[in-house]
Image (tube, rainbow, N blue to C red; front, top):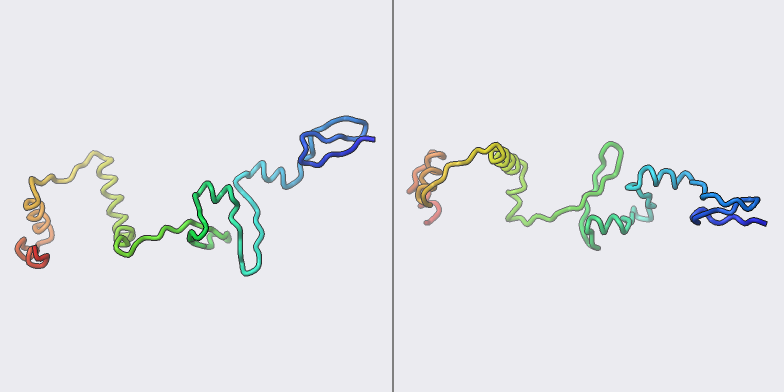
Length: 142
């Protein structure tokens, strides 16, 4: 009598001794079409396990922070980067918009003004801001 092997086996022994590839289940077909999607259960207190291969690909470690958001009816987890308070200004939307402007200007071949020394730079900045260089020095205690 022929025996059937599990669907995970390389070949399945069908009645009559004919060996055939295992039949694909619905889960197998979905996994093949969308290999990047993995189901994980929601446990008590809302605990979800991020699969190991995803943790490895994103270099996530125990204790890392994740930002949780709802987008188009989906739960989206994004690794959070902790920015020190003294660097938060750089990541503000306004500053990042200026950074993009500079990047675009540089990509277009535009270059800013080059100053001979720090004094010339200070004078140019003061002129641009409509301030007196001596007033800037007094404020900065330079």
